Every structure is written in C-alpha cells, then in structure tokens.
Length: 430
Image 1: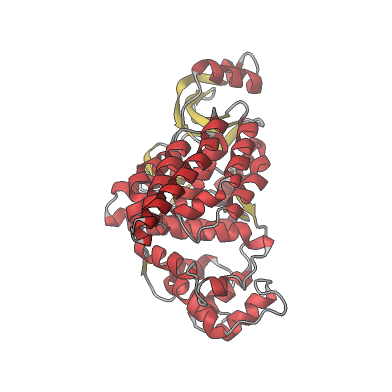
Image 2: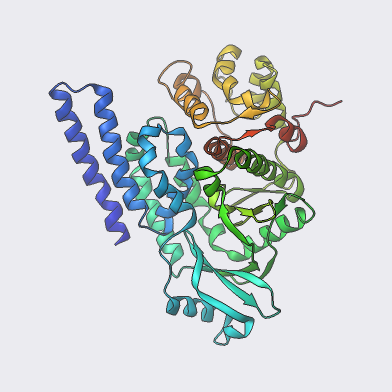
C-alpha cells in the first residue's frame, strides 16, 4: 500500500505538467502556471506523506524543518500536515505493542512495569512512545520500534529518491537528493536503540547541571526498545511556532540554539534530528530534548576552522575566508573565485553573527534561499564552485535546519554570544 501511494506521484506529476503546458498555450503567464503546478504537486506530495510511516514520514519530518524557506502562499496550506509529521503517526494496535514487548523483554515483560499504557503518548517515523511506571516507581517513556521498520524505511527512501524531480518543481533550487542519501546512510544507526541509549546517556550527563536544558536519563534498552525517565510536557517547539507569544519564541529559540552548539563541546555529540517535535516545553520553563537516534559524533567538538571562517566572514575579511575555504576543502584546487563574490554569496548568511541580537524570520530565510539558488553568477554560479567535504555534511544540515527552526519561531536571540560561548575558533584568541 505504501509503495503504491508513492508510485502514484509521478503519474500525477505528468498530468500537472501537461495541464501547465496547456495553460501556457492559451496565454497564461509563466509564473502563474508554475505556481499552479507547484500547488497541485504540493497537494499530492503532502497528502501522501501525511498518511505514511517509515522513510516517507522521516523525509517529511526533515522537510518540515525547511518549510520556512518556501513561499508562504505555497506552503501555508500544508504547514499543519508538516507539523503533524513532527509529532504523530498512525499507532500500533495494543496486540502488536504486546508482541514487541514480548520479543524485547520476554513473555513476562509486565514484571518490568507497575503499569503500562497501551495507548501511545507519541508516534514517530520508526517507533512510538508509551507512558508507563517502571518497577521502581519511576514514571518512564517506553520507546518501541515498529515491526518491519527497517524494510519500510529503506523502501520508502528508495522511492522518494526516484521522485526527487517533483520536489524540484515544488521548490526550485532545493535539491533533496543529498538529504535522502544522508537519511539512507544513517538508517542503521537510527534503528539501533543501543546506540541511541549511549548517545542519550552522554547528553544526559553533559546537561545534568544545566539550569535551562533537560535530557531524560535512559534506564534500560534492547536493540528495539528504549526506556527513559518521563519528561512531563504539554507541547513542543511546534506549538510555540504555531501560537507562542513573542517572549516564548525568543526564550525557546535561544535555548534551542544554545543546546545545539553546546552539545558538541560538552558531550562530543551534535543532535542531528532538529525538527521541532523533539524539543519539549517543560512546566518549569526548561527546554526538554528527546530522540537521540541521529547524532554526529564529534569527540573534538565542532571544527575550529568552522568558527574561524564564520568570524572572518562576520568581519568581512573575505580574502582570508577564501583561503580558509580552500584549506578546508570547500574549494577544490584550481577553482578560482573572487573574494567579493564570496562576500556577496555568504554575507547575508552571517548577519546573525554580526550583531548583538538578531531577529530571525521566514522572510529573511526565504530571501537567502532565493538569492543563493538564483540562476545568476552570484547565485548558482558561485554555488557550483563549492564542494562540501564529507565531514561537514551532517553539520551543514543541522546548521541549515537550525536556521529553519529559528526562522519558523521568528526568534530574536543573542546568536553571536552563543557562538562566542560554544563554537571553537569564533572568539578571537586574546
């Protein structure tokens, strides 16, 4: 059924493009035709993604981070669908839940719990979470993996990889192939709850004394089951994005950025699944963080060259930026580019690092994405000269995803101070 739904997309695409051509032949303006095709494409894509688990839902969650970069008239009707993909999926029935518990904990699995709620508290792309009371009386979250999750995940991602041109119609300049390839490469890690428990334990220990961030302690795990202390929260960052006050947007935007940058320095890990559903609003005002299946392992922290280059760009020393990019492999040997062109390309992106407080917005991010993807010498012409070294791929995605969330929030935050505190190389050596 899942494959059939995904396979239906190219047929609809052919019909939409034919309809668009017909309209052009009778004189409809090109931009109006494109918008009409985009809207029809978006309608079908998001209706399908909204019904699926596995890789389609995982991809939809990843796309939800970048919705701030898409035109509001296009993405507006689908924002609710994308938000649902951050927090929910069709649940497993109780009989299936019990079979998973039996497979992971044995036939006497109930001895581990004082009580267990068969109704899931949350559902996601490869598993769902149940509220329970552990044998010692602790309130816990029990994360269970869907049976057949691995097969479904890979099948969906292969299908989506074949459909990348549809997303090109939806958002010209947005290349989803690298995103899908990265999701495919990390499937094995995300399916191993032992690795997730290890990463979560490191984050829990690293933030144990933080007054603003809380990471639940993992208590028990198997390969497909993870038990953690329960975080009592009523909503996530998605709720703040939907209807939060400006004060809430500013506070939790700052805490979100603080957590992302502090993680590599404190734990040697970068939380790499930054969709808003993973960040919970606690009753005491702290930001709770969950889901550590996708992480970048950075035992030395974020690269100091990254901080140095961002600082040089913020200081508008683009001759030094160019040489630094070449030394780090972002510019291959023999590629020639003027420092002024680098400045025009990257300059607006470093605005948040140039001022004491910066106000993020959908409009700001949309302007940047439109500018760098434009078919001009200062847009695609510059972009084609850059190479993204493998060690920076996940860092780059998290950075862009983080900007997307901050722009969805419309947060005003002391971004420069956060970089000075946690990004190696950004603060000049004294």
